[in-house]
Image (tube, rainbow, N blue to C red; front, side, top):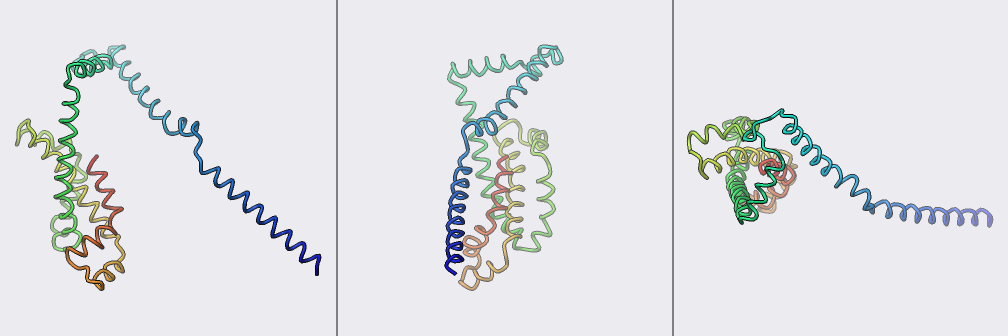
Amino acid sequence: MAGTETKTAQGAELAGVEAGLDALEATDSGRTPLRHTLVHKILPPLVAVVVVLALWQALITFDIVDDPTKLPSPADVGGEFKNAWLEGTLLGYIWTSVSRGLLGFLLALAIGTPLGLLVARVKFVRAAIGPILSGLQSLPSVAWVPPAVIWLGLNNSMMYAVILLGAVPSIANGLVSGIDQVPPLFLRAGRTMGATGLKGAWHIVLPAALPGYLAGLKQGWA
């Protein structure tokens, strides 16, 4: 009996040592080496940029595209960036595009979020405009540029119209998809605790639909 107890104790100690070694291995494996990060995270995008620049320059060098107004060389583009920087206009150009994108996205967010809630919660509205939103989402935003230029001209209104037509359907459909995946138990529990109407939408529906909503936001921003 004593020998059996000793063997049992030794087996328990060995098991504890093995568990400790496994824990150490798991801890070590959680640390990503710098070389791994450089090779797998940083190097591939750099290689892709170099390949694109090489192909771009090859089109110019071998006269595949011989009209600089259609495709200027990388050196010409770099020279324009340098001149704009020296003249102090580069940041203004960048801010013009960024500000349009941010303001347009905020407007799309303000329109797409209540629209998505309405489509998801009201069956008549979903049947009426749900297919239209899906069709608009599948249409590339660039397809709206020619009619927007014809209707509104070359101005900020045209830019915002294209942004809204591209982003609002994505945001609304993303929210609808997220709400459709909310467990009914969450809604019943919210109603039991008095979270109904706008209060229920803010505290129950939107947090539970966040995965689909974020996917729609990402697509709308793109």
